[in-house]
Every structure is written in structure tokens, then in C-alpha cells.
Length: 285
Image 1 (spheres, rainbow, N blue to C red):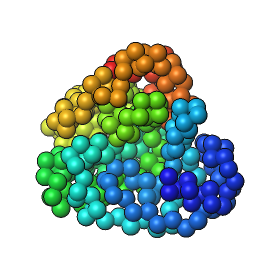
Image 2 (spheres, one colour):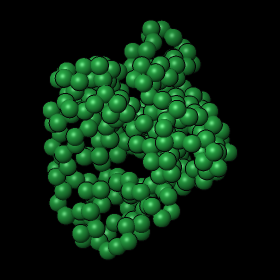
Image 3 (cartoon, rainbow, N blue to C red):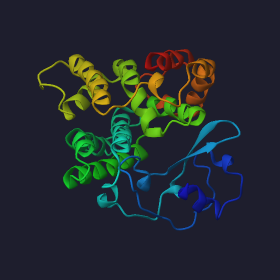
Image 4 (cartoon, rainbow, N blue to C red):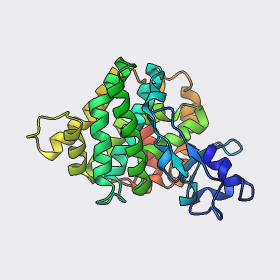
């Protein structure tokens, strides 16, 4: 919101004309971004996601002019986060690291930052969830969140984010939770397009013994993500109180089309069709 407000101070309305990439004409007002959750990394990205309540979509705005002037990243501001929020934003951070690393736009500059993000999550997320006052864990997760933002801002997010935004727009499920609920199923679908990279993610999370084949390690990653959600008490789609089965089934086609329209699925290791996205929503349900 702060990014969009700062930008609209120097650019004309309506906001929806800036949906997409590189459509902002003038730099916005100077912005100091101070994150209070260890999740989106938005303080260092060129992205803003704003809900269009008229069309029931989450608009993705991507432009270098949206990057804050200053980011003040202080993990002490996250010490009061409750467990549920810690879990949601923590898996959001992990999703950023994974998608930045497996994206078709990944590159030698973003790879080490994405892997550093993933390693920090593997080391610190569950401790931060169990022990909210653990300063080492909170600091590690705050670093991971900023690293994840740096990585995907210079690579991209992929199918998880593309499918997550319609869930948020239509059902008002918080972004981190919707990412977490979709991550295992989307990862399994995407494995054939980047087996070695997904295997590296599994090794980085320390969910393998290190001697497995790439295929076995990649499968271990999917199991690890499913188990992580269970340990962090993240529900399946059907278990979330804001989700309704009748509305979900009725809106499947719209969600699939909105996901594709976001542009993120086109960066996925396996690029899905609308029909495949519908199947993935059903698998995650």
C-alpha cells in the first residue's frame, strides 16, 4: 500500500493502469520501508500487489520506481509476531527463495541469494515458531525474508504466486497462508522442469542425506514441504475457515485464468495450461 500511495502522489489515477511491468511514468515520493514481519521482503522489491475490488483480482505492479528509497530491517520488530503469523510469513519467505531459484529467469546473481534465503529458513523457521523470543531465530528469518525479496525481485516468482493471488482476492485468505497451502502440490507438478534445482533446495533445507539421486532428493522436497505445513499447523485449502467448497468449485476457471493473467506462471519450470491449474487447485483442496 505504501509503495502505491507514494507512486500515486506523482502519477495520475487510476491505479489499475499500472498493473503489469514497467508502466509507472514518474518516480514516487521518497519512501522509507520498515518491515514488521519476516515474510514478503517487499522493502527491497519493485513489486506491489493491490486488490482490485471491482474485478476481484490482485493486481501485480512491477516497476523499478516502486523500490523504496530506504529499507530499515530490524528483527526486533518481529519478536511480537504470534505463531500463526510466523508460520504463514515464514513459508512465504521459503516460497520466495524456492521460486526465485527454480524460475526460468533465475541467474548467477540471484541463485546464491535465493539459496541463502532457503538455508536460513531451514535453520530458523521452526525455532522462531516454537520460541517467539528466540533472537537468533528471529534475526535469521528476517534476513531470509529480505534475501528472498532481493532474489525474486531480480529473478521472479512462479506458479505458486500466480495461483495464490486469486485465492487471496476471491476468498481473502492471507497471502502467506495461500502460498503455503499451494506450495507442495505446485512443487510436485513442477519437478520435471528443474529436477536438479529442486534437489538442491532439498539438500539446502537439510531434508536429505546428501547421497540421493536428484530425482529422489526432489521427491524428498515435496514430502518435506508437506510435513513442514503439518508441523506449523498450516491447513489445507478445504480446512481454511474462509474457503467454501461450492464457491471454490464455481470459481475454479476464473482463478485459473486470473493466475495465468498475472504472468508469474510463465516463469515456472513447467508452464501450465488453464486446465492444469484447475487440476492443481483441486489437488491442493
